[in-house]
Image (cartoon, rainbow, N blue to C red; front, side):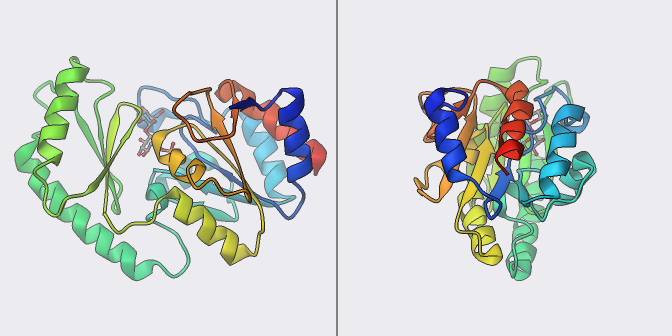
Amino acid sequence: MIYLFSHAGLRDLRDFIDRSTLFAFDLDGTLAPIVSDPAGIMIPPDVHERLVRLNGTASVAVVTGRARVDAARHLGFAPRFLVGNHGAEGLPGADAAEREFIGLCRGWMTQLGELLPEGEGTGIVMEDKSATLSLHYRNAPDRENAHQRILAAVSRLLPAPRRVSGKLVENLVPAAAPHKGDALRCIMRHLGCARALFVGDDVTDEDVFRLGDEAIFGIRVGNSGGSAARYFIRGQDEMAPLLDEILAVL
Ligand SMILES: O=P(O)(O)OC[C@H]1O[C@H](O[C@H]2O[C@H](CO)[C@@H](O)[C@H](O)[C@H]2O)[C@H](O)[C@@H](O)[C@@H]1O
């Protein structure tokens, strides 16, 4: 992986982007630092101010694992595209599929009511996002035990979900749902953008990096040997300098 703020990284960025580029961002861990309470995230003011400026200059998309309505509350600005539920919500022409995903999640929630009773000090929290579900265990007193309980319960769900591990969370996604890579390509087609820059930090963001698409400039938040991203920034606190760099080029 190439450090974005190295000579080579900055040169590549400057050569790649222009005003017709789509600028796409993940939310948790990328635009906002990770915190223990999912409801308590906040986009730092310096990042927010730069994002709003970028949004007034170029096409901006936010592609998040959160439900759109929830993400919109935290964003405080309206990007050109807001895709939720890891790609399963908000894509053009996907309304019928979304209704199907919501039905599947209702069924899983009923089953999980039996298989994984919340409360009783387990610390497992189910986040109902309509088109997908997230089972959080960050605040469990015994994370390992909580994680094993989640995995055991999820393995019994019918029909089987696509299970995507995240940061102390297991995400349950309908098997037929588009992932973030599908979603980004769909937005690019829809907007007629030949190129996109995407920044993300988590396992679901690897669905974009793994495309290996020369038309997508992938930047991971955090250096990781296991990532398919070509570039990285060291941490979420480098988002504001990254946005400065983008704005300077535009
Ligand atoms: O695709 P993203 O925008 O990165 O969303 C991924 C998940 O983010 C949230 O959970 C994660 O962030 C929380 C707040 O920092 C943290 O408490 C939790 O442990 C993380 O897993 C969100 O709650 C999920 O719905 C998203 O899927």
